[in-house]
Length: 196
Ligand SMILES: C[S@@+](CC[C@H](N)C(=O)[O-])C[C@H]1O[C@@H](n2cnc3c(N)ncnc32)[C@H](O)[C@@H]1O
Image (tube, rainbow, N blue to C red; front, side):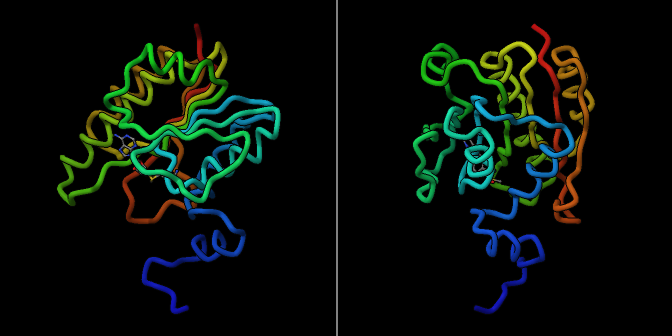
């Protein structure tokens, strides 16, 4: 098959290693650096389609752990006993319902991204709304000392977001994985050890 213009080293590697998307290498890099996901963990993956982050999480948590993925789109290629999918818009999820349906989590990861319009202010603002909602969900579901990872597009509100995160976690870090495309404005915020 002829490589399309988006195909790069990571996309080829993902295909060869049977990952569902090249974005798996971002989570792998973050996890290697911060040691977020452990065997037996209960993980929540926000914006999980097509499924590479969940796929990575399913392997890491093992049969005694559990991964719940939420997205607007069904990750049809993910079917594992320790994986559960919820089709929903995270912006309109009721908190009480989330607590009942998902329950306490050791780690919450979010690779949520809006449909980009090409208009910078709009894209940055939509990404920030998703990141804020992801943080809100993490704060409700994470156990004490749980970890949070969240994608956000760089923009004016990032400083305020970092400052909000720093009031909830023992340590926060901004991380840009090597596998992030050069022209992308995305960074990942990592919150280590929720303080409750
Ligand atoms: C970059 S993709 C995630 C890729 C995924 N981490 C992987 O490795 O396969 C971003 C996802 O966020 C989802 N998303 C965007 N807005 C959402 C919302 N309001 N509620 C739920 N999912 C949303 C999109 O449907 C899309 O699948």
